[in-house]
Image (tube, rainbow over all chains, first blue to last red; front, side):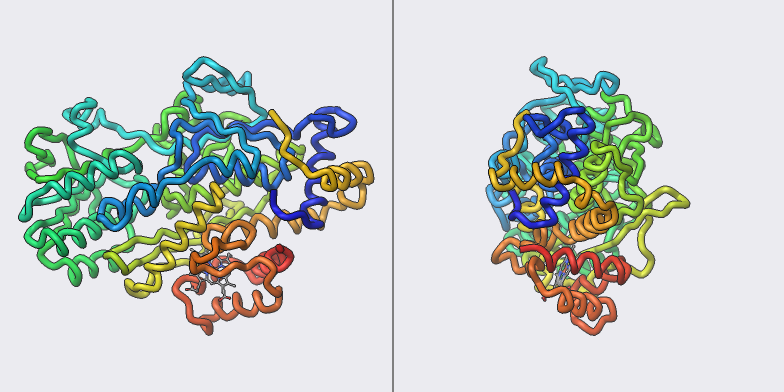
Amino acid sequence: MEPINRRNFLKAGVALGAASSLYGCAGMGGKSAGHVVVVGGGFGGATAAKYLRMWSNGAIAVTLVERNPTFISCPMSNLVIGGLKQLDDITLSYETLRSQWGVTVVQGDVSGVDATARSVTLADGSTLGYDRLVLSPGIDFQFDQIPALNNADAQVRILHAWKAGAQTVALRQQLEAMKDGGVYAITIPKAPYRCPPGPYERACLVANYFKQSRPKSKVVILDANDDVQSKKGLFTKAWKELYPGIVEYRPNSELKDVHVGSRTAVLEFENFKADVLNVIPPHRPGAVATRAGLKLINDKWVEVNWLSMESTSTPGVHVLGDAIFAAPTMPKSGHMANQHAKLAAAAIINLLSGQEPHPAPLVMNTCYSFVDDKNVIHVSSVHTYDGATKLLQPVKGAGGVSSARNELEGKIALGWARNIWADMLG
Amino acid sequence: MSLPALRPTQLALLTSMVLLGSTAQAADPHLAHDIARNLAATCANCHGTNGQAVPGSGLESLAGEDKAKLLKKLADFKSGQRPATIMHQITKGYSDEQLDLVAGYFAAQR
């Protein structure tokens, strides 16, 4: 629990008072202010679980369902691919959520959501009832859009490494096994995709590795978009100044298919053969979002009410992170998912005690990217609720990018990771 | 579902709060506290939960800092007087009233 102070008592008094009226019980005798099930223990879900417990002073019971035994961070995983960190450095435990915050962490997969009965079914057949459901399912890949990659065998040979874990390490091994003079190609899907600057950061860190130990090798970025999607000026400058003759950027290069054996990217008008081919397939929301039958925008991303992160179609179901149709200029990022989670936690605490969500929420985002082993660039933005559009809109004049790549932010970026990891799991 | 471990002193106090009720439920202070809490939580990604940064992470803890000093630093970031990699961009996204709430919240943390 957080240290006791007067404000917490006041808050808890109200939460528990409201809870007792909600449930018609006289005292606190074992009743809680409600049960929230959180599906997905990434930046969104883990943060939601912790903040629901912390801000309700433990009055709200929280069950977190996560399929993996540990959390492996996507932010900083490009450092593993670049040979600068190990997977252990970006792997964290769910233990503190259990022991310090009293979250019930269940390892499992959600196979069904019954929003009318307010229950979820797990793959092992068990069910969990909820008063409010938080879905933070992240993304799934649309392998069906790259026909030859739509099978398990191909997927261990041509890697995405766009969910951190075994693929991160495997991609590193492919790079280490590549002969000098080889070509690493990375394909980027059409926006919106998870972590807009991530592919360009990865290109930099692979180039940084090549420059140091495979000097005749090249990095080719095959981008389905017509231009660099994030921190364009800073990335372009890094490629030109740090990696001349190593990094080549090709816009309008949408991947249509692959030839698995020859590691060839099939583009619209040409084929591109690589020695290491790294394909980031197009995304859709994690499957549980579609299983829950939520309203989607563009037949794809979940539509939410920005005052509460609640689905616009399905009462009681809140959705966070990469799976939602983002507000204007809002990236799909871990930082953003953490902020969605706090917005949702505050709203859920209000809703469970019969109050309206706070009418003027604010969230902010920052993405740090390494351009070599020491230098980092950032992009930041602040978003506030706008009653006219009912969206979180970027605050004009706020946010921006680094004035130039710099080593100070290299240190700050590592500090950011430690603090956001602790904010969600510590 | 098990309730979290509330310490006995906490429990006693909470119970009396619930029973006494009314003073604690004067809506405004709570609303203000919640708004401040929510706004301050947007800083936690870098400065730690409730302003308690991870020791050695290189980012400053804000918990328990004097409110006036915090406000001065934030104003100086906003005006560009205080050198920064990012705080000048972040502070411009918050109104002075919002920064006042945030500073008050962090100052009250231990």
